[in-house]
Image 1 (cartoon, rainbow, N blue to C red):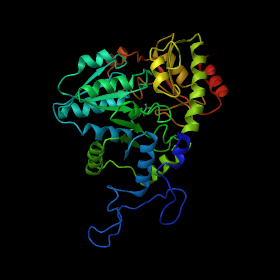
Image 2 (image 1 turned 135 degrees about the vertical axis):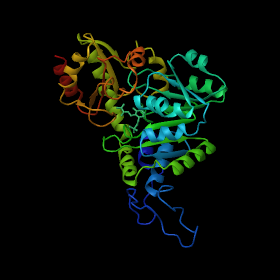
Image 3 (image 1 turned 60 degrees about the vertical axis):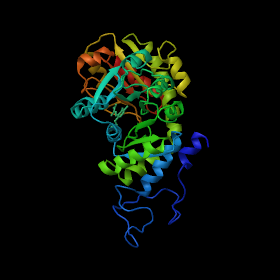
Length: 379
Ligand code: P1T
């Protein structure tokens, strides 16, 4: 099945009890048993829910994996992966990543004895130099949030495999339409389904997809034992969003390419971070591992002060100033004070995340209107 068919059909068939074409929202916490332990595969809704099961199967198919495991948010999904580790274990992560992921590693898991090292993962030698006998997990985010760096998934996961280290690729910025990390050798792929998968900024949800049955069993165990599960209505909304994933992402990527070019030519803009430019250091790798270059664009200003950025942030009308990304509507954000505020300034300055950096999540509106909106705000 091709991607555009999978989004609508993979794992989804009319509801067996009624024939309902759309997967019903099974709004129940428990299920009747004929005798103790004699049931239809569903006992208690933290453990199993039919709406969730359909979404898990669909997501597994989209990511070219065998097992999908859903969570109440992207962070809950990541937290479940962290629970695979033991005190004394170490993580190597990209040094440019979602602020919440950095916060979970440093502020929560360091106190349980799990140490994280943050390196410039686009350079595989930096990863190699950090590996030691305690390294148990490689945390890859590509394209990175918010600097849009590209990490070579196949090479990096290959290196990890040689050392018996688990790998997880946070595929939130790309979506499975653009990139499928399991086919490039990753052990786990993670999503904040809040973003492109849901696609309409109306749900918070997370997911992991894996191929290995043992790893899936461990993650299902954690999902049930720790209980960060999504409700059935949220699963329904993600299932509904996924049906148009390919169309939305296709259009958003086209818009982003035009907006990146417009910004590049603007005299007030000093730098545009967008992997679609041939001059981007990760362009060739992106071309190999992604279908298109994504719909996220970050840029910095000639006048590199927060005040200059604020003027733009509060003067767009179609781009809404808000956290998050991946919805049909375009958003504008200020990573330093919003999504990445939990990263110490010295750390974020190392990767170019300045106080004047602006991040765009380009939506599926008409590109001419979006460009006109930015043009006016830049004036
Ligand atoms: O928000 P939640 O569903 O818990 O997902 C967290 C998350 C994980 N990974 C990446 C790459 C993310 O970008 C996020 C959430 N990011 C934002 C809210 C944001 O605006 O960047």
